[in-house]
Image (spheres, rainbow, N blue to C red):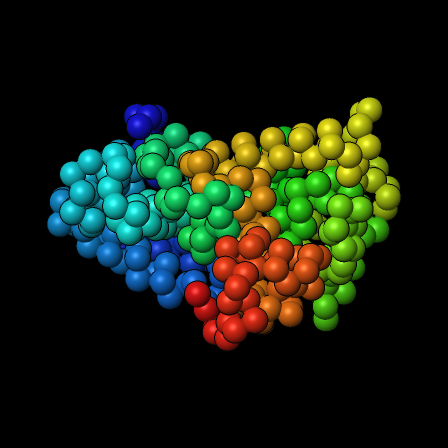
Length: 320
């Protein structure tokens, strides 16, 4: 783990004050998943208590001693080793929650967040799946990162790609989105997903407040941008929607996820979209998830990491 120091101001923020700064940032940028917020707060309170037990009282100490806090919370001496899968899930949840709160709080008080990113411990992959959907804590962490990076033109491309994938587009489809493909009406903002000839249907996808904020900021950064200019891909010789464009934007998505150590072997650039489809499946039902995925029911169930043989029998619940 890097020992890159935080600024004295950031390092001295008491842990008990971080949650309040996070709450202000989350409200300003609409990054919090409503159903996940209570879990995030509870998890942060557990982290704070464990840190206090170890005599860790401020941000700087928590970052540099985060592995010790993770070990205290889970009972694992070696948190970067190969604990049981159930323990790995706990480790990732605690790590991601800590970094989410610290990143948002640091950004809220005007601190450079790069030292925070340099201090994230690397953990072994969370599951034994391949291309699994992201989890709620990972999505929330990536939304915080996007809200920070969208403000700078040099980093806003990755934030834009992520926001579109979070809405349900494939990485390839994000290369085709233009300003003309976005309906930002307050009642029901939508984005056009182009689909492609390999069995992915074109569709209109609803946008949440987080998505509209990210896309509006991206469009405002270039006053000369025309309605038909693409938002997340700047083609030179390769056409939007092509295999070369897909490879380029997948690299952008991978680097964006790498920044917060969501880069284990069970995730890919398709994982944010898979989270959206899974989330929709459980909140709105299989039919709504199928409409958002642009594929048939069985393919949608596989994408959402739901066994296709039970696809017809799953009853939607409020959260997962």
